[in-house]
Image (cartoon, rainbow, N blue to C red; front, side, top):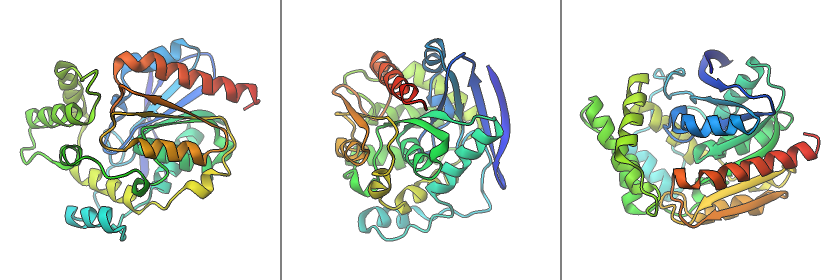
Length: 301
């Protein structure tokens, strides 16, 4: 595995890891407040074993990438109001800035074009990467995402509380408890996450650094992002949209609207998936990614 940092855009360095493979490059983009470790090592290793060079990275304000703490985050009350009224949240940067970061990472790594896979907010970033950096994207897989958070339906109250609750105690144990509580709530109910595995993941993330302010800045960027459906209609590359029927955070309609907006998209609905990537569903998810890549390769991309 190769690890490092690259200046992606002015003032923003991104931490990245590469799982080496001999085939086309796959760029994995994770979601709101989520470190690249939420693309689990075995998932990335399996994708590499299928013949791909796999890159995962921390978005700005997450993990080992640049924290923009000189930019005050909007208060939570304003973000909640923006979610309900669709008024501006006052984001200090945009989702497009995060997509430009991803394009800058690719340029820095001398990756001309990649097959891009994004989960949740990462799916939104992946969509913007395909819209505004089309030469960089050979195929697109958007997982548990939407063309606008305002089109995805309201999350369940329990899911919203789990996502937005921040531990007052800054200790490792509080961070572990918060991650276990969050993913037990928003994840698959058929295949509930293993608390011990979640605890290990939470400790690894805590050691790399967590930022409540960064989470709020990213959330504001999601809330302020405009509807992408019209722009997605011009994205003609092979695409797959994956969504869980059990998702309590981004409702299934978010995935359906994403697929409807993309002219060359297939929609894969997984009945037993929540807002997570349950290990028993990895074969179906990896197969879908593989099929999308094959369609891109067949198109000469």
